Image (cartoon, rainbow over the protein chains, first blue to last red):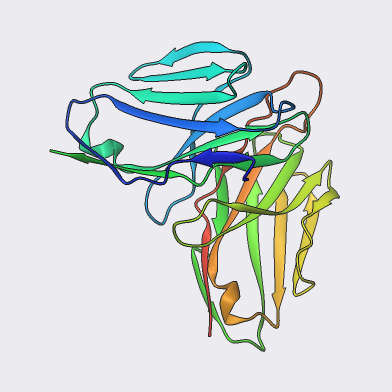
Length: 110
Length: 116
């Protein structure tokens, strides 16, 4: 079993819909949670990060962490074609090492 | 300045060549990373430098040799690579881990390497 599991998709939604992405993890030592967006042939771009359980909102993006269930989510409201990308969850414990999920490819259709 | 820069953007090399990838950041970060990313896969950690010292080597073959000349620069020296080493090589930087600090990593755009 991988330490971080993420559905590879692709996830195809119409423009304006809510995109729902999630990851599950197995290691209770993980305590920092990040979401990256990666466009084709580009480096990952940090979207959101959080330390605690609960919700964190930034514009159209909401990150949700449930440490008791070892489950994290990212919601994108009012999705746009420019949101079409691969979304990677990344989780870490106390050190420097990030553990990535496999990434979910999202396609927002006009 | 929240940017990590990498040069070159693209590199094609033969199996007998020696080349270097370069990474630079001016965010005052003291941890720097090299990742390898194959198509449709997540980034795979190769090396971590913390305060200019190598702190993590993920059992990377010796044909890859990292170097951190100062706190802003990170190099990856390449020698006798194989075609399967063709990938996107990503550099990242962060504050070093410690306390409750998040030390989120910021990535560069990558160098697309092709080994013939």
